[in-house]
Length: 346
Image (cartoon, rainbow, N blue to C red; front, side, top):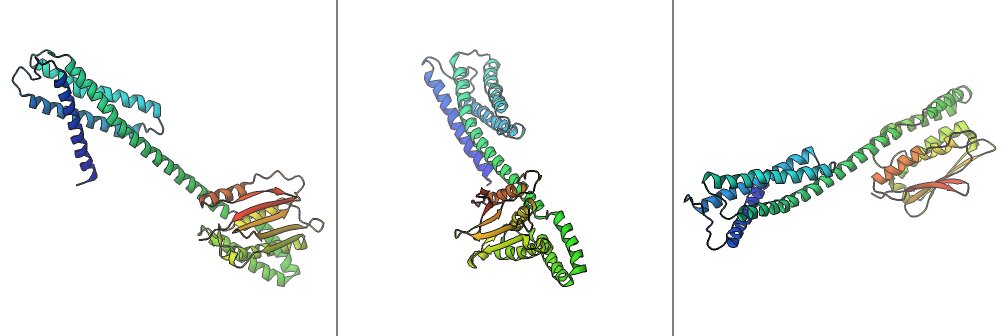
């Protein structure tokens, strides 16, 4: 037996018990000289059975409207309109399924309301029950829809961040490629041996970039190997104007991070700062001993450059949020730009 059938049976039993209680209440409050029985001789048990049928019809109809409105007017999107529509439907359906059949019963049997308060008690009792019963159902549906909407919003947020990060992974600065090719041409002409090594390193860089999009995380050791090639390409172009230092323990190299994290930070440092013989650009990667890295560079901004929007840094920050890893931050301090990266142990 399916869950829906079981729930339906339990619901009908509960509704029937309540309806019987309402009938008992009616007969209890009636004066002793009035009998709650049709003059036509139809047994009151049949009337009670008919009432149970219509009362259950009332409840099932209200639940049907509730399910229909969940699709057309979700609570999470149209709370006020949904509330007014839901309450209106409950009252309207109660009139159609309870009051009209109950009234018709008397008129078809040529009977008046010998006890006028009877239909009032039944109607009011029905409305109270429906408001409570449907209210519970509505509350459950509301929280389910709210939770579902939050989960969907979180899912789409994560998918959006993943898509943005994939784009970022594939966005190795095209100027870097053009500069590298120009350097390669010059080295082929003036220094063939360096040109051969330069070509190998360039190949490693782009192979890593292409492969990294298949991974959410990569070991720090692999990232550093890639960065060595990346820095080599820049040093051929910049020479001693670029100084690069790494201080990391062997154990830390097996921790993980999102691929291309260091590349994004180092490329930002080179892109936004002057690097020449008079103004050497120092880039340092240090381990703090708390499963974190600090990537820092001295600040010597390029004159006339438009202020950075920190797009890459913000994207990385969101990436760590997506991985549920706190600790990523960046900022200036004592003439240096510092970025703190949490390493992931998994």
